[in-house]
Length: 542
Ligand code: ACM
Image (cartoon, rainbow, N blue to C red):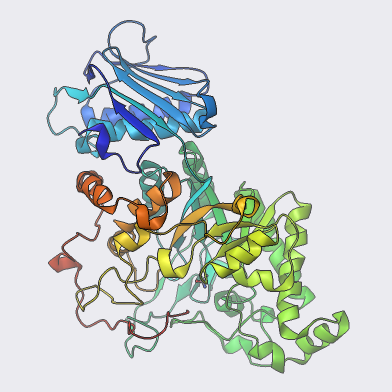
């Protein structure tokens, strides 16, 4: 493996002088503030190499030295990694920088460094003489996992945190609730998971498909599971941002607690957790009961998730029930709101103030812009760039995740070979040529772009293999977009990225990732008989 194969590409890399070998005499010298990374690095390298890497001073023999110190302008997540004849020195601007340096070191050791047992006990592992100077372009480098449409058991989340760390990604956005399932234990409201985490059956393929699997599906994370996930993420310098989607995408909650719905419009006691795809018309009632209920939910969410940002969804709330509801109409009149859209803004505004008062910041999908936001609130721009541009111009922070580029549920190639040919084609190269900062933004406005994330909506990814297939290799491109200082999209050296990907596929193989191979799905990844959504229509909106 050479230093030129790194993904994401570092700011600067130089091959210089003699390298070193890692063997049974190599020690790991951890300076103050690097103990956690030393533990993690020892664990993964011990597994892959069989060498113990005992603690040592690092002043004789070969050593891996970890330290927090002055890296000049590289910032707290930046690092300088030097390999010479005495070993490897990982100097981070802060503890996170040391951790990201350790990810680079692992890549330099070659793909077998990603295995969990040594292939050849006693083998010498060599590191090329190298100096890497590196720092991220963006502070928000994320992946959204939709665990509502299909539940991903806790082990799958922990595995994804490891995969994210290996790609220097640092935000896991967990979409925990939707029409089709509620996945977070709330002690105060147990039926959210007793009832809301299970659906009787699941639609196969796209929303108009006539097929269901006729099998119950569900699951949820206990509060202890979440504490474990959050702590596991924190050890990897990853923040978990929870999303509780309101006031739309809420049918599972209404099925559990019918009083949350618009009871003067429909018999909400007849609702069940939704068994099809699309956007349910059954939305929360804009009542004090609902607000209080969700405050109680968010109180537990804040206890579990220490993240600065809390995501409240806010997307795709059909207004039909509010138009027909005397209760909703009375609220609009009483508060002098601008119709049903004003009611949605009032709902979001309530939680914006509620979160701000507790020292947190609200983030929501770009629909939340429609009603005016507290200054600290941020926007996930999914309906193209427009919402993000408007948000940045209004002084709000933005995470750019337009469906057109980074929705990983969309198909990766034309033709009928894709397991579920959903949506429009977004290739690895398309993701590589995505720029989170639109050219229209001026210097000051640009600073509001916190970064980007890829979003995996899970209607058609019912297990880990399917998730891997949709996410990889495109997440590797997203990681480079988020971390590396790439030039404008048209000037990016895609051929060089493809060349480095050849090395990266070997790492993904060692990690056991069921990615989509460049030549198309393997026979066992094909899935005949499941209908996809047509690709020649307008961009789909779910
Ligand atoms: C979304 O895709 N509805 C955020």
